[in-house]
Image 1 (cartoon, rainbow, N blue to C red):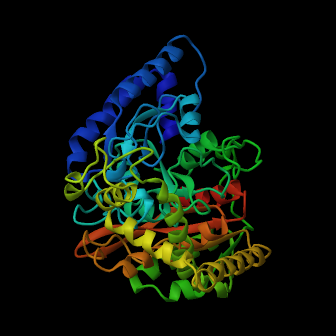
Image 2: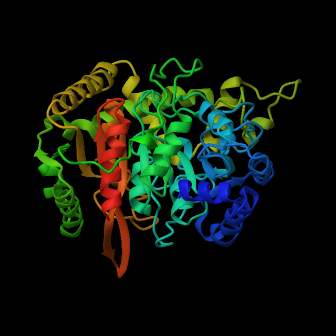
Length: 485
């Protein structure tokens, strides 16, 4: 889609202003039902679009992403624009700077339509945990779009943006991409700077993309990747135009498949995944059945390490530095002569009580418990050791294969509220995606087909995981499947 829109812009078939207005019209018509956007940035978008139109008018060359409107998950700081992370505690927070990914998009001339909805602080698998209400799946308004980047995924699926940024901590771009029938991509850890990304779990978080196609994902990643002096974990990787590697060639590529993953699926989902495997065989890829024994420990290890990092990262939201400051009514009756609460601790407690949602509180408590004296060695340290074993599994397997193919999710989108009272069932939604975050490898979810639930055809995707910093090989394999459909 991005390349097609780019061609229309340079041929004068449409202007960036007209294109931007078209997307805002779509948001106005559809988003009252979907709740994908939290904040629209019309003034900024029109200003950016006019600059691109002026360049085209003057005969200047424009890059692929210039003048193309997209959306930003509301967990990335955007200068002068409300940035909430889906939480009441940051409801009135105006970011004073741009995240590096946003800065790079602006430098590339991209048009920003607004900020999208998410699970609070990027914690959840359904976008039901937002302080601003759930986002709904465009394919069935009674169902979730997935999470945590559900707002961005829904915006793409409903054609309310040409591209979108998300963040991926345990599958937060890929899982909603699968449930909404779009492409979701998580780069190698360090490929994209995390500067300005409001942290949930710093050793897992990575800025990712949600797009209409694999090529679009490659184009957006090319724009936002690269080393950043503001982020010590950003890698010394050379800048690449990932879209230049999409040659459609797959012959001889070795694709690893964990047979047990397919056997554990419901029959209709399994048939879709088996069809993907057969398609790759027909395209000339070599299917290699692999064994990854430590993968079964990935989910429990993730749900010890991730809440532990959440506990640490969310400690900064205390009602003192920025964001919400809440004082309980009974405390206000006991203010001192300066009009302040009796104790600083009371301010902390009131702010976090009223400002944080149930899932954020749950993970903070889980993480604090895992890090506490007497449990640190038993839980956190052991989980980190398991993380190392899982990484060694990947290192071994990648000596045999080029990419690994798995389902993205076990099933299509579930109904809103269906798993809200059962956190363990919700956490199982990430069973196929967390390993990429645990190990730091790049991964992409591509639409695989549809399965029927209650008379409705719902999309489902498959996942490819690649070698560290081999996004070009990952994109090539995903693109070969996509263009064969």
